[in-house]
Amino acid sequence: MWRITLYFFILFTIDSTLVNGESKVPCFFIFGDSLSDVGNNNILNTTDKSNYLPYGVDFPGQIPTGRFTNGRTIEDFISQLLGFQRYINPYSTQMDKDILRGVNFASGAAGILPKTGSRWGDRVGMDQQLKNFNTTISKLKSMVGGPVTNYLNKCLYTINIGSNDYIDKYFMTKNYPTGNQFATNQYARQLIARYKLQLQALYDSGARKITVFGLPQIGCTPAAFIRFNSTKCVNEVNQAVEAFNTMLVSLVDSFNAKLHMANFTFINLYSMQASTSPPSGSDTKHACCKLRSDFLCEPLSTPCQNRKSYEFMDGFHPTEIVNEIVSNIIFNPPNSFVHPMSISQLIN
Ligand SMILES: *[C@@H]1O[C@H](CO)[C@@H](O)[C@H](O)[C@H]1NC(C)=O
Ligand SMILES: *[C@@H]1O[C@H](CO)[C@@H](O)[C@H](O)[C@H]1NC(C)=O
Ligand SMILES: *[C@@H]1O[C@H](CO)[C@@H](O)[C@H](O)[C@H]1NC(C)=O
Ligand SMILES: *[C@@H]1O[C@H](CO)[C@@H](O)[C@H](O)[C@H]1NC(C)=O
Image (cartoon, rainbow, N blue to C red; front, side, top):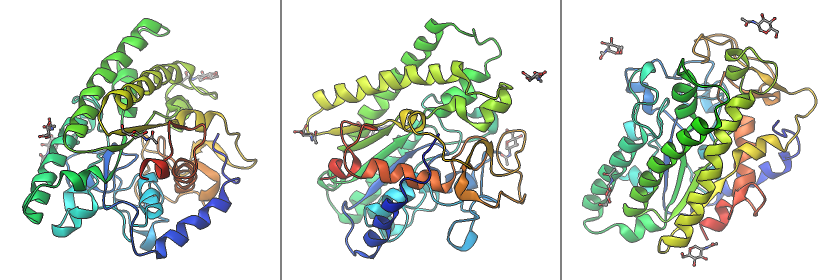
């Protein structure tokens, strides 16, 4: 599904931006779920954690930081492309002046709806992440001894959330009416109504350059293949996700038309996955690691050797190579996967 080989040439850009001193934006704030978590769940009472090997096996120092992948997340790569010397730290360990560079609020199992993910234990849902952002802003204000609105306006914001509202809520309901298109649209509408308030709150807090990730093809993950006992992508799941994505594009368009001095952009992860064909020899169906019953990696199990030719690290989360490919596509010049602009346009 992901074209793993074609984009290698772009990877050189990362190394050249790393040596530059100045970052292209003063700060980068990250919201989302386990796709973006870099350790916020480590201190929570939840089974949805990844601070053990084989997670992190390809991270510098082979450290399992709490990232749900073998190496870096999409946002890690974006922070490198922005010219930051170090990755953006999790809210749970944020320290002093470091918050001036931005903070990562993302939490595994989190959703748009507050109850999403509760069966795994504690997590920081989107509403709470926004409250934590306001707490951070108060700290910034006292740090600089004045208003920080102009500063916040210049930062980059990314939000990647919604997958768990499907995986852990919608498709967990025993009585889910299969094939009921109305129910699918109704659920998507409910999610989007809430998401709209959340994105508006983010804007009200001072965010102006906002990247919103659409949902990937959740029906094509190893977890979906196993859970639905299918060898093909689970259409029912993908259709539900598509309904959400379509409404999210409209929401982004309406924010761009309505909100003063704000730029939102939508990232089409779904079609990035759909329109690229798997390179021969790469595994798009199986997890790289040995799975637990909750589709996370079995702690201390031996992962696959050739991690650059696996699409998924565990039942849900892409490998580092996929994160790297995606980051380069969405950062660089405009293309059909970003609507209406790439991240480098967004920050100019
Ligand atoms: C953690 O969560 C579990 C299950 O929800 C609960 O039984 C346990 O008491 C919690 N532990 C702590 C330390 O709060
Ligand atoms: C954060 O503060 C802004 C501006 O004061 C406010 O509009 C917004 O509702 C607050 N967000 C939350 C989640 O409380
Ligand atoms: C899974 O699907 C296969 C082939 O379609 C079928 O033979 C098998 O019984 C199914 N297993 C379960 C647990 O439903
Ligand atoms: C960003 O938003 C501003 C103000 O709303 C608008 O004038 C500008 O055209 C937008 N930029 C892009 C690249 O769409």
